[in-house]
Length: 576
View 1 (spheres, rainbow, N blue to C red):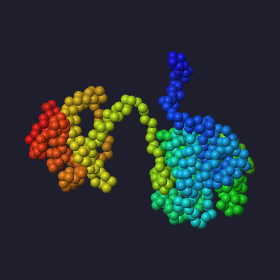
View 2 (view 1 turned 180 degrees about the horizontal axis):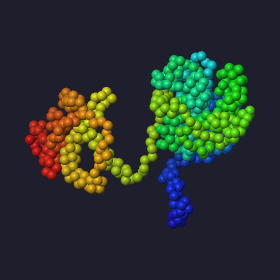
View 3 (view 1 turned 30 degrees about the vertical axis):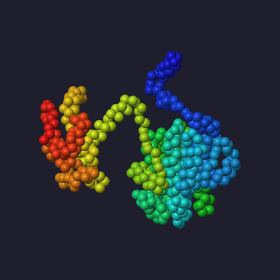
View 4 (view 1 turned 180 degrees about the vertical axis):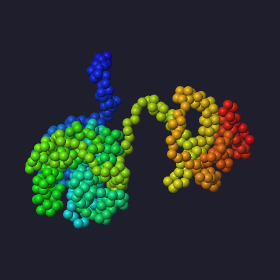
């Protein structure tokens, strides 16, 4: 034990006494006693995954996803689960590419169906055993710009939005809570320059990504409502809106869950992959000439292999553990750019161009639409209603300090009592504008509080505490009492009168209110005369008579009156 203590002190001394010396303690946990079943599950988990990170990626049978899996498996540091619609096609691709099937597992997931997403998440939970998901890459997407009409999912929603955004939204909600157990969990969403209207590609080509006020989502987004904004269907806009939604949700989930769950949320634009199955529904002439245009005119062309390296980088590179950002890459030299490119040392400003290498990654700016916080909140709420997603509670870490627990337990009742007093002095209001109603039990608590706490304790312990507080803390500065732009408005007379009156004595609850300008009285006036006798009799018997109730008939035939003397006088109780 002495030797261990000495080694710890030496380690701290070697760190120079800085705060970094204690960083290793952040992951220390109290040893957990495992059951036999848990030990068996952990053994199976280690046998299946070893020390590899677990990655889930959607849409990896072609294009960007396929190249990303290729790079992940090449490191021999990841166990990848491919969530795909066509299992047979995925098996053929894996065989053609020569992937190590010990580190790659295929699971069916049809993003056109919320039920399929739920089934996938259930099967994933069984397969992963005790291994948390380290990376979730939301890559799958469809692009149907030539359609003159909407196509609908199994759930009756427009396909592009459900496949690209809504089903990924649901999947994240299912996997989020388990991911917090991973050491460096990341959720990566593949965005697009077309969803970012602060660029030429996103803001200069019609139609523009714009969710407006989400009227379509607010209406339920069910057939025949095909667009998030509730207006007419355009295939290209549906794609752009879905990418805008992904990027907005990445920012919102970062704000909501990054601190509580320790998960990194980011979106990326890997560049314009002009030769990809994403454009399989475009016309033949477009598929032929669009890559040429991007290569030799705009310089924005990126091959699918290079794009796959970029998506892999965000999942793998330690620099990409930053949350709430939008990753892009600066392009390298272009053929035919001449002296202009050489003057910039081969770097072309802006995101998406080919070349530039691993170190050309940077945090790109996002448009005002992506950063619209109010719209992000509405998007989260409406998407939750549409998908039926259930999100975990975002709880931050609470100190296990025993003193804090004791103080919390002691103060709970006091806080509840003080809140009752606050509500009696100025009642809150219900959603319909009526005053908050207080039950008989709460009114009895208020009476007891005024009799015991404010009367007896307030004139003894309370006075000592107030004097000690003034001596230790001093008086409140005048500047702290000033600065209000308006005086507090008193309650309306008719509201107070209505809340103080009752229809009959047997009503289960009654409003309680006081007038702001009513003079201070020495007599308690919390409940009406019809109930005062009953309440005061019960409190008197419980507090001052040691539980001995008055003989039948006595309590009901006499009227008790609680009197509170001046602060220096002794408190008196008289029965009239």
